[in-house]
Structures are given as structure tokens and as C-alpha cells.
Image (cartoon, rainbow, N blue to C red; front, side, top):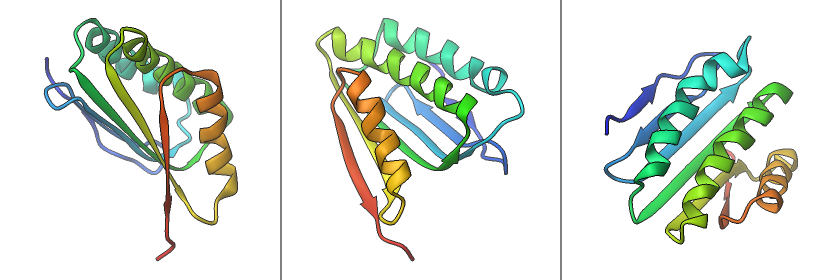
Length: 127
């Protein structure tokens, strides 16, 4: 399965999904004009990956900011990843946030409450 690589822009996060390694990364800012349009290829890739995932999948999520429409799409991404956990395979969502950004930490906690997949929260020190 091909990897999915989307470069970051000022409006969209970088997406780096590597099926062979089971390493999925989303990083940056998510405020696209049309969130569904931006995330559609991500959904399609994940739907294929969920059919035959690696034994261990680690998801790295590090957003600086995301808007309301992106939050729904992020939940849809995580729901797809949750299907891997429901198959009994090893899944970990690593949620990175700036140590001074309580809102981003709480957003991760809110997602964790909605899903079965385990989360690990990683506070990043300010530079």
C-alpha cells in the first residue's frame, strides 16, 4: 500500500501515513476552507489501511490549532483508527500538545473519551 504524504500549508497540516511501518502522523494547523474536501483522501487511505493494518499502529497527532469543522474530521480519522483497536490489534494514539496549551490537551482528552483506542499525552516544552 502506498504511503499518503500531504505537505503542510498555512491552512492545512502535514499528513504522513506510512502503511508499511504502521506510523501515521498529522502535524500543524488545520483550518482549511473546506475540511471535508481536504480530509477526503485521508479518509479513503485509512479505509483501505483498516482492512489490513500492521500488527502495531502508532498515530502521532500534533496540532497547533484546528477549527470546528476540522475537529469533526479529526474525530472521523480517529474513529477509523479505533476500528483497528476493535480488531484486537495494537494501536496507540500519541497526542502532542504545547505544555502551556490546556485547550489542545483537553481536546485530546475529549477524543480519548469517545474512543476505545489508548491515548498517550505528550507535553512539549516551549522553545
